[in-house]
Length: 167
Ligand code: S3P
Image (cartoon, rainbow, N blue to C red; front, side):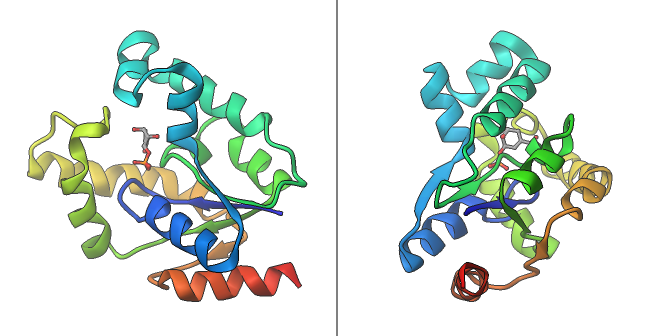
């Protein structure tokens, strides 16, 4: 079973994915890192070289390349479910969990990791604040196609949820 963790930048997809996988003995893969490995470039560099649309093509290629019978937890890039028919692909290949964190939790994380994210790296805190509300509002319709909504559940609770799905 492939378990996709989806949600906005800063919601903890990588942190939760790593810890859940360790707890229940599944493999773990971070989609952005995998794209960086496959291209030999950082996400920032990819955006510079081929723009956002080129990056979105790489995301779709990555999702398409997955085999449904893999036993793995994948944290997706924050925008991945929101382009093309990626969300349909995700739900066809595995099960999806939307980490719909409260803004208080996600925003603090986002501020810390701004530099590695091309879409927000130049923004002031106020601009980022407005961007967060606007983008999340646009993206919600995609995220909410997920099979499960995790709210603010911690990784232990999310691990338990995945365990029940494996039975
Ligand atoms: C993006 C989120 C990033 C990364 C890229 C674009 C987005 O992943 O894929 O910078 O459009 O929301 P994280 O959600 O892991 O930060």
